Image: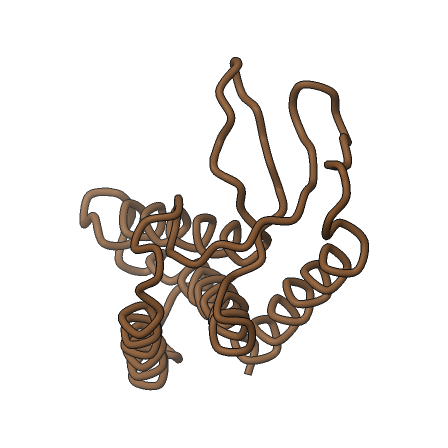
Length: 161
């Protein structure tokens, strides 16, 4: 139940942020939040992360459905025995994936708007759904290091309970 509720909250947050961006930033100058570091502006991404696979909407749709089916099956089979970090991670992955999937189906592109400049390098423009996916993936990697490594902790501590 936690995964479903948290995923829905994330989807709503993502979609609301994109609604605001579409309402206030289309055809306008970027909104500078922190000079030479963080700005917001409207971008239509017709590809995947970092703009790869531009125009491959059908392929991206198929990949998204496969990922969501895989995550759902894995979650249903293992929900009660998964450590909390995995439940949180899967929620982030589902919320982020569905957030971008809604855009791709409804608009035929994904709305990106967060632009970060680090050490004079302009990072790819992204959105909240992208952040959820990246954070979820990082947390899964941390979970693997903590819970799948037999030398990391005793068997009784494995599930953070």
